[in-house]
Image (cartoon, rainbow, N blue to C red; front, side, top):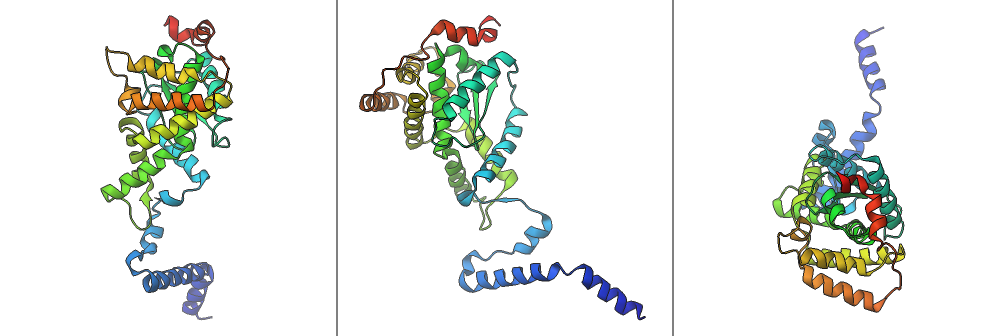
Length: 285
């Protein structure tokens, strides 16, 4: 037998999977080059390098959750997570109650407490919500804390961070025709969540969504107003929660209007003693 012919035939028999791949790429290149010349993409280098690209404009829920998990790894690597089991169990139960009554109840929500005495809370993608120990200590009761968590869940419901990431990626020129490099997307999302304020429109939307979740969960609606008013009246310093959440006075006015349109008589969650017992490890530390 001709060994050369054997080796060539063997090579191609072992590489038959290449034909449909090459054919598909050639077809795609022709289509892009013929009909969309301004958006033509050289896919082969991306495939060979194994580049992971995120398309923010058409992300599935599964992809959003996965990106949220990767962002969470970055966040927990840079902050100190509060590990007390009693407090964490309490926060998980409270958060899941609100999430079940949110606009996106099917997400696998994760609620974490950051060991930091600043008054702050934030959310990323795919159901990840974070609150500082300073926030828990500042809230007078469960309903006030629930109002903040509901607000952050409202940001997830409105996909506000995802929209902000897309806008920032385009404005900074790091987005391409194929999308955004996954590592860049993670860094961008973490930075936006931790450091930059939401837009006025997003804040009003998160308040509205949060108020609905709060009401559906049976909490006193007044708690959302009282907590925001408490922080606004704090003349000693501006809490981080408000410095990254603009137009607080206008938001209070809008919340009062929303409550007047669909009022409830519930006073659930206003018991201060019950709340302090639930976060006792924080109170006595």
